[in-house]
Image 1 (spheres, rainbow, N blue to C red):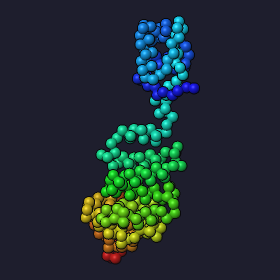
Image 2: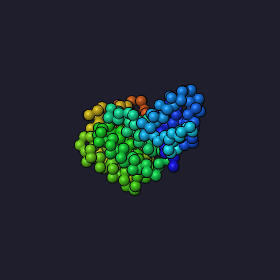
Image 3: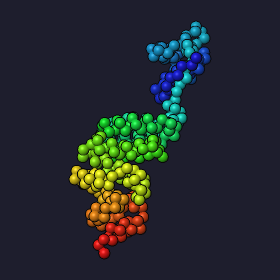
Image 4: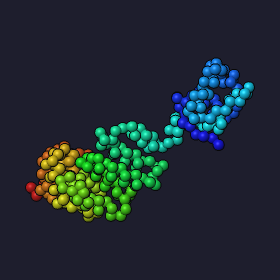
Length: 274
């Protein structure tokens, strides 16, 4: 029975020549290795010191007690999926210093078709580890609500329940900020007209969540664009108008997709002022 040994640049050349278990004379080994027969003998002793059985037959030569199969790292990597190769690369990174490592691993898990049947359990484990390490890295919550969509890895009603759970875990101000991130993601996945009904989002909670986010962290132009769009879903003209003051003409394509949708929103906001 062949024994598997990982081969690479440090694999002794003598082991490579003897790997198939066939008998090789000391003279032929010395010639192929460019060494003396005494050097071959020392090489045999080094293999034995590594725990590799080498038989020495008088006047005939050497052979391994059992053939070995040398596993070539490049060949192994070639057979791995792109996702598995990425995991090996990321395994050398200290994830404690960069919270984005978990997001990368989540993307890999989602895209690994070779293990798609077990993607959900892997995503669950990554999410738990991520929020344990970085509970205030709010992109995790946005990513989680995306993964819990029924079209991906979620069960009926699971995404809706998850969003509500954020108000208790992490809860407090952090829970509200997490809620705002989840709301932004759900806004991108659903039609504005049905957003609140389909997702279970509450406009008063969204409004409070974004106010908390602004107070604690400030808001970028994209955040104001998102809040404006969400205010339209909540039919809150005053809140939309306030957001529009921050936006000016700096509409964000990531939120509105096309300028005409932004212009239509502006028209609705300004209706009461005419």
